[in-house]
Amino acid sequence: MLTAAVAAVLVTMVFALIRALKGPTVYDRMLAANAFGTKTVLLIALAGHALSWHSYLDVALLYAMVNFVGSIAVMRFFEQSPVPDEAYHEDQT
Image (cartoon, rainbow, N blue to C red; front, side, top):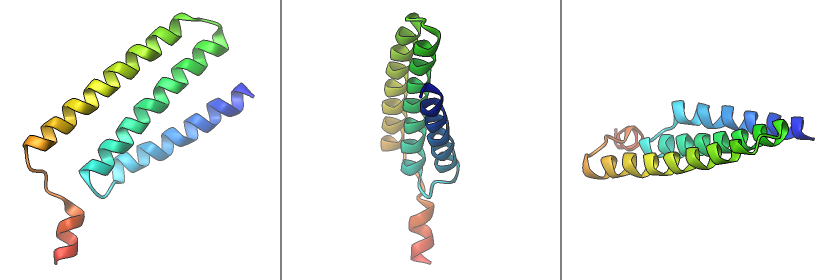
């Protein structure tokens, strides 16, 4: 059962990575990167459960906090500097 959970998380991580690389807008890419980070937290927690190392849960929580703060920092940066939206420019031509 744990193997199926790890496999499912890895598959969703691949989908999030593809979306982060090919997203139509910067905001879609940022959302996919955040989803990838969240799946990484889940994978670390699953690894800790599988290995019975409870300290992995602390690492997963720390990674979740860093992921959240990093996402907020990047979004604040994009809020202050205009980002060209490729999808918007393609619709206008």
